[in-house]
Image 1 (cartoon, protein in one colour):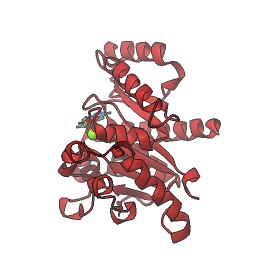
Image 2 (cartoon, rainbow, N blue to C red; image 1 turned 120 degrees about the vertical axis):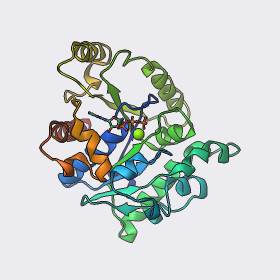
Image 3 (tube, rainbow, N blue to C red; image 1 turned 45 degrees about the vertical axis):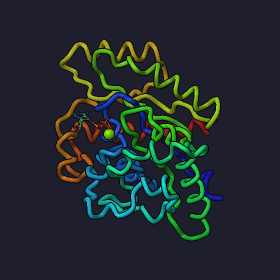
Length: 269
Ligand code: ATP
Ligand code: MG
């Protein structure tokens, strides 16, 4: 049984543009760089994680859409990336139709979980990669895709942008987690909250960071991701920032986040 080996984290926040995809790509890269086998599942119709990891449109033959709608085996959609040990299940605009297509299926929320578990259980026997981490890059909504991700995941990683009203919307996210926990996935918890786009020249960033820490305490990672233009340039080159410029402050922050995450995971066990 391979499933116990794999930790599945949903990178989720229904707010748009808070750094979910940037976190999935660069945290995934940093974890792969220290020897972990990592799979990113692009679960957003925008396909930003796929683009950011250099997967062209023609390469997206099979996507996470096929996984959840047609029960295509995970390995048929998995692609390698430029980063050794970092693989991806790409996403594309078909994902926008998932809500409608699964509307009549009473087990619709379990689609991703079933796919990931059956993969993990087969992996050990059939020589497929056994992933240490699966990071699910969620869309900016609490749609059936996000519910699928929360049902499949052990835990949630929540990026919060250091901006006015950062905590707005978080209570809605936490209520959704509660609903999922009460039915679909009793074990779901919050792995951590990561502050993104921190601007040290802006007092507001500090105020927001303090407020978030006061409310969420130790769930908040010590590592803060700075606002860094290199992080936003890298995707247009189809590369993680860690390959584009591994010494920029954004890359360094994601490397620290990965080591803090691994430490947190060790003390959890
Ligand atoms: P969506 O909700 O649309 O999926 P998201 O939560 O995945 O968005 P990203 O796509 O990661 O957010 O980031 C939104 C934009 O901000 C992107 O253009 C990205 O390149 C940029 N960005 C993300 N993090 C940073 C950062 N720390 N510094 C500067 N720019 C950033
Ligand atoms: Mg995104």
